[in-house]
Length: 275
Image 1: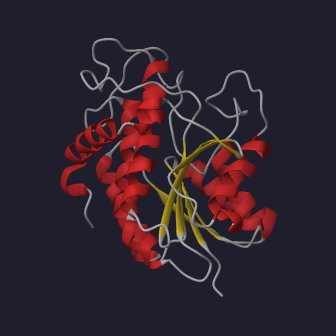
Image 2: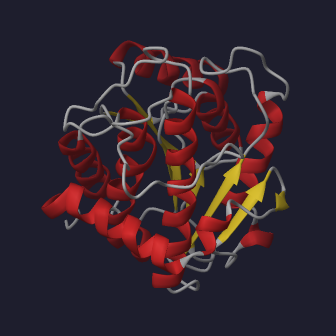
């Protein structure tokens, strides 16, 4: 049986890089994504040196929706069947740019664009490949690496033009990911594709965390569990804090809020959504 194919976004640092090593070690076919070509090449070299396995790499800046679309199309062309999509890439509360509000290439608030819109677009363009991967291994899986740091979305100021803070932007974007997972779970046949979200661990030692508390290993264990553990096959529409199911911000349970957010996202990505 062919090895499961797993795409990890943001795989050149921190949790994503450690996940790539872990899943390659399990025998999965891992596809690594990164923004910086030098860091991407270094990650591929590091995995090769550690395991003897040559992993495929894909470069794209998730702050530009056209590049997200091209990333999805390249992956789909190379892998018509994709077993796992791990939306891990993101921008933290404090970096880059400190407390200053920033915008993506497309003019959207940067954390909303990278943490939420990019995953929204990438996931939907890869749905045909995910659906095609349904096999005796079980349904394909979409995993959103979210956070316990969550803030309700202000639909009167989604881009935080009036009352901006990096922390609020981050927390809003992370809750948006969970709303997206619940939407996907409602739309998808759980026997074919599932969608879950998690807070992998608290303040892991990555470049976006100034004062670590947890270890990368804890985050890897929790995230890999959702991605490949056979016992979780078919589990969908859930949010986990580490390895335990948890309740996100109440807005995630509001179908009207989910519909409003999806309408905003679909309008912003427009024709980019459909392959």
